[in-house]
Structure formats: C-alpha cells, structure tokens
Amino acid sequence: MTDFDTFGGVYPAMCTPFHDDGSIDFETLRADAQRLESAGVDGLVPMGSTGESATVSHDEHIEVIDAVIDAVDVPVIAGSGSNNTAEALSLSQRAADAGADALLLISPYYNKPEQRGFIEHYETIADEVDVPQIVYNVPSRTGQNIEADTVAQLAEHENIQGFKAAGGDLNQVSEIVEKTRDEEFDVLSGNDGETLPILSVGGTGCISVAANVEPERMSGMVQAALDEDYAEARARHHDLGPLFRGMFWETNPIPVKAALEIRGNGNGNVRSPLSEATPETYDRLESLLAEYDDPYAGEAR
Image (cartoon, rainbow, N blue to C red; front, side, top):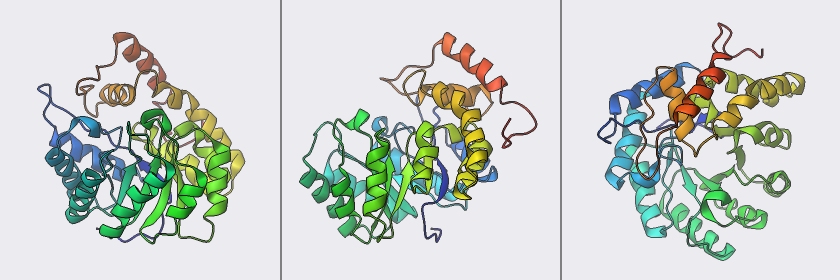
C-alpha cells in the first residue's frame, strides 16, 4: 500500500488481458501495469468497467488486483463495486486486504436505487472498510444518476474521498466541487473528452481509457491544466480528441483493447457477451494511431 493524500493526476482504467481460451493473461497484465507506471501515470485502476469486471469471478477479480499491486509501486485504486451491497462490501474488504490503496465503487446498476439507497450503500461500505473510496457515477451504464446533494452528504464520511464523474453533466460536476470544498474530497473525470472542462471547474484528475494508449500525452494535458496553463492544455486536449472519440467507436473496452494490440501491448480478446473489434474498427484505429506514432510522445503536435 502506498501513502498518498489526493486523487490528483492521471489514472488509467486498465484492461484485463485474456488468452485465446478466455483465461486471464497475468504476464501481459503485469507488463502492461509496468509500462504505464514507466510512462509516468499517477496510479492504476484495475477491475473497473474497462477491466471487464462484470465477467470475472470474485476470485479472478482479487487475483487481478493482487497482480497489479505486486507489479508496480504507484498507487492502485481497485474497482470493487457491485449492485449488491453485501457483494460490494465483500469485494471491497478483499481488495483492501490485498493492499489496494483506494477503492472505486460503481453505483449500483440495474436496481435503480433512490438517493437514500445510494447513501446507505456507500456508507455501509465506508463504515466497514478503512481505505479511501471513490464514488463512481456513470448513469449510461447504471440507469440512475447520483445527485449533487447526495455526493455532498457522502463526502462528509472520512473514508469517502472522491467522485468519478462520467455522467456528462458539467453543471452537476461544478455543483459537486462547490458543495464539497470544505471536505477532503476530489472530483475526477471519468470521460476523457470531459477531463479538461472538469479540471477547469476544480477537478483534480481523471480515470482514463485513453491513457492506456497515450499515457504521456494524457499526463501532459492534465498537468498543463493543473498548472493553469490552459492554452497548452487546450492544445493537448484537441490533439487527443480523435483518440478520445476512437475509444468509443464500439463499446468500451473493445476499441482500447484493439488499440493495445495494434501497439503490441496485448490482444483484442474480450469475454462474452462482448465481441472483438470488427476489421473496420481495426483499420480505423491503425490509421488513427499512426497519427500519434512519432518520436514526440507527450508533446502537443
């Protein structure tokens, strides 16, 4: 476990690599974690949505987290959420016992709880698991939005220290930053294309899909914004815009896994019910990535 005081900077939402038979490729997983660490990211996030957490067993879930922790020295924020509070609590405790520095907890999906249900869910876990926790709001996957007042109430809990914003509503993000200014609480972007706007209203970083592919460039953009050099940050944001969009030509993580394969960092294997990227997507990604394959990775073009 690594000591850190704030969720600032760039945290790639890691993919989980699979062999052709569907088993987890731990060798590639560890190599990928070390590649990202060497690129200068601020931490890693295994077993989130991009990590296909919905299709791994609980034992596999913890094995992936454990492997990433063992492979790197940067902070590891472990995805440990579920739509079942008891299950999320169990996964969170196991991840903390494995040495995770913090937890990322997706809001309960499918159930569509009321706001009081969100509070009870998150506080139950925060009361029992003594590591920093990030509330993850992604209504497009869960069917329900965590409202700003709910986040502000959750932020009063000493173990709930962050919010991952993937709802597409900058007004709500700004309101959350405003209402949590007196707490030790950080707001992170969960959508790459919204990272710069979120940083501009007081966000502190991002949990990023694109950082798997261009970690240096993503780190450069975020650092420029944190340094309040918004001219540089805007240039880097627009430089990365085609990549941000390309990562969602098909359902995440299909395109990012294809991109990593093209770059020689794994393969495009996903677990059912996801399907591998189409040949057309591979062709488009090859053309897109060629635009970034120059000796000045991390520099705005």
